[in-house]
Image 1 (tube, rainbow, N blue to C red):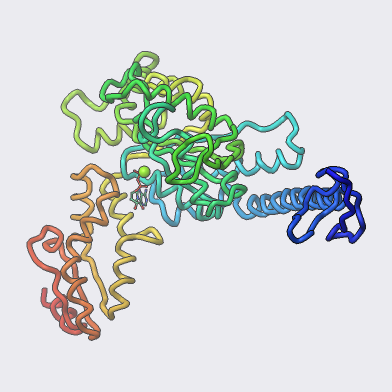
Image 2 (cartoon, rainbow, N blue to C red):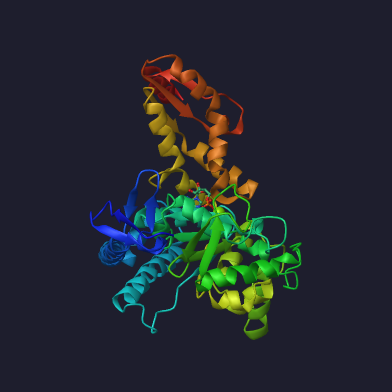
Length: 436
Ligand SMILES: Nc1ncnc2c1ncn2[C@@H]1O[C@H](COP(=O)(O)OP(=O)(O)O)[C@@H](O)[C@H]1O
Ligand SMILES: [Mg+2]
């Protein structure tokens, strides 16, 4: 290459170009070029800017954390959860403390510049029957704290190499919940639902037909729980060497694993019987109430060794220091769930119908019938809304046909399907009630 003199388009100086290195950016067609020393300056400028930004981010985050902690002390979190979740007092308390400690730990880490005396993570295992409020409680918690939250079904995960979703999918789901913001993702909450379904087969609970990949899934999750950099591709992209990957550090992600752990009460009972006197409820066939009462008493006494017997590997149990147990909901609890929480189904229907100028009334007996039917369905509070929805379908179809102020009374017979809820003019329904 002959030595040429070219003007740098940035600093305007004439540069003797011995090699590409003297003018790293050069377009021979237009003569546009940037000299080595300008590029160095730009590089330093960018580096300083990024360092500065990283520092500001860290400072902002520290301030944010301080605010989050001041605003969300455990008793405040609990009070908020109380507005939505009926019963489960102990679980609400445990979760409030766990969440608070989690963010305190993060702050400690930041304040101490990531020293080696970090506080252990308080990942949580949450157990309780279907429809008792596990998912609901966590989603309200994340809403209060204003942090991203994603639920991933652990039973859909498979060991790398098997057909199905890799464990990274849990982090990827959170990344999407955080609007693809990596920093937000790294402070979110991951809920691994159906965690009991990945118990290993050698666990004492044989009611579960586990496949051999389950222990592998637990091993895979272990690294994430401990805190590691997880790499994944965007949704819909196959994992191949060239696909761009997203990296997320899980060190500050709060992991909550949960499930119904069907049958674990038997393992707990067996252990207790061995050690202490058994909890007796008579020898005759126990009633539903007795079974529930016994379950509720037993579940709170769960210990790590019971989980091990159930088929969760000891390393995982070691990473889940907080055990949060929820109770079976009885009829009275279900009745309260229908009307008391801020977002109670009855309140929601009242609001919906009020928009069509209709006053909705449920008779007490009707609500109790809904609770009874939900108990029969054995899915906790999960079926409450569906039962009401079925009853309300026709009236909700008919109501908007007119703007007249009206009134609807839902009776027990309506819930039983013996009669249709009647749409009445405001006065008439009052009369009907008085003559009834
Ligand atoms: N203890 C509770 N208090 C209020 N609502 C509840 C409670 N338990 C369940 N629900 C309601 O029932 C539905 C199912 O509950 P969910 O939290 O999904 O159950 P699961 O324990 O199986 O995760 C949700 O709509 C939730 O609001
Ligand atoms: Mg759930």
